[in-house]
Amino acid sequence: MLEQMGKAAKQASWQLAVLSTAKKNQVLSVMADMLEANSEVILQANEQDMAQARATGMTEALLDRLLLTPARLAAIANDVRQVCRLNDPVGHVLDGSLLDSGLKLERRRVPLGVIGVIYEARPNVTIDVASLCLKTGNAVILRGGKETHNTNLATVKVIQQALEQCGLPAAAVQAIDSPDRALVNELLRLDRYVDMLIPRGGAGLHKLCREQSTIPVITGGIGVCHTYVDDSVDFDKALTVIESAKIQRPSACNSLETLLVNRNIAEQFLPALSAKMAAAGVTLHAAQNAMPLLQNGPATVVDVAEGDYDDEWLSLDLNVLVVDDIDQAIDHIRTHGTNHSDAILTRSLSSAEHFVRAVDSSAVYVNASTRFTDGGQFGLGAEVAVSTQKLHARGPMGLDALTTYKWIGYGDDLVRS
Image (cartoon, rainbow, N blue to C red; front, side, top):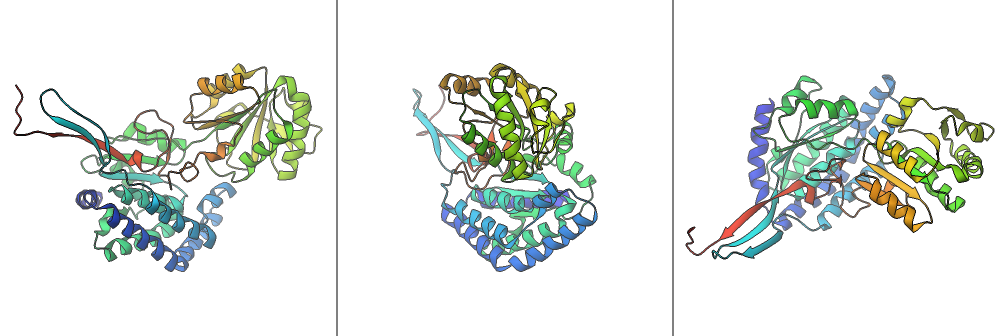
C-alpha cells in the first residue's frame, strides 16, 4: 500500500513543482472554503474521536489537543487563507554571479518533493501541513495517530476534493488510514519516494524516527520550556508574563514548564507567585530550596521529582526552582532543556545579552512569553513543525523550511577549458 502511495505522491510532486503561485493560491482558497462548507462533517468526525479518547482515559491535555470546535476550525481555515497571502519562496533567486569562465550562476529555491509527517492527537496539523506543502509545491503523506483517525479521514477527503476541483491529483495530499504501527516502520524506509520526514509527537516517536528512518528526519516540538526570573525584574510585569506563558494554552509545546528564580528576590517573589498561580489553578512542583517560601501560600504545592525537570507537563503544573545566579539558571536549562524555547525576565541589558548568547535554544526571549514560538506569531503563516535541530531548519518551520535550492548555470554554448 505505501509503495503505491509513495509512487503517486512522487508523481504528484512533479506536477506541483511547476505550478504558478496564482494556481497554488487558488487551490488554497478553495480548500479553505470547502473546510468551512464541510465543517459539520469534520466536527462530527472529531466528536467520534473525542468520545473514544474519553473512553480510553486520555488526559485533559491531550483531549485539548485533539478537540476541534467551530471556532478552532474557522481559525484553521483562516490560517489557510493567510498562507495564500504569504510570499511564495519557490523560484526565488538566493544569490548569483558571473564567473570568469563566462558561466552565469544562480541558486534558486525549489520544492523538496515529498514530505512525510507523523503526528499524534493534533488534527490541526493535517490542515497546517497540507497548506504549507501545497504552497511550496510539495506533496505530502500524513500519518496521524489513532486518536485522530476519524477527524483526519474527513479532513483529508475535503482537501482532496479541493485538489480535484482545481484539476490537481488527489495524491498531492494523502493520509495513511490504517492504525497499524507496522506502517510507520514501512514509511520510515520509503526513501525512494519521500524526501524529508517530520515526526510531531512524544520523545518515543522522535527516537524511533531517528534510529529507524532511512529518510532525513527533522525532529522537534518537545518543549521543556524555561523562564529565568532575574533579580532586577518588575514583579507585577514578570508575574503577568509567567501566568500567560503557563495558562494561555498549557497543552502547547511552547508553554512554560519550569520557572527559575534568582535567590536574591526569592523570599519576596515566590509568595507573590503562589498567589498568582493559586488564582489560575496552577499546581507548583517546588524544589527543596523553594518549598519553604511556597508551602504557606495559597497555591497547591508538592515536592518536585527529579524526572519532572525533563518532561513536559502540558497541564496546569509548574516546576519552581531557586538558583544562585544567571549562570546556574543557564546550567539548568542546558541540562534539562530541549532546545525549544527559553526566556529571561530582567531589566539588565547585560544579563539579557548574556542569556541570549549562552542559551542554545531554537527560540530565546527577553521579557516575553515562550508562547510566541509559533509560525503564525512569527509571521510565517501556519507551521509544519518546530525544529530543535541545527541543520536545514530551526524553530517554527514555515514555507522556506520546506524548500531546498538548485544551482542553475547559463552559458552561451560554453565549455570548460
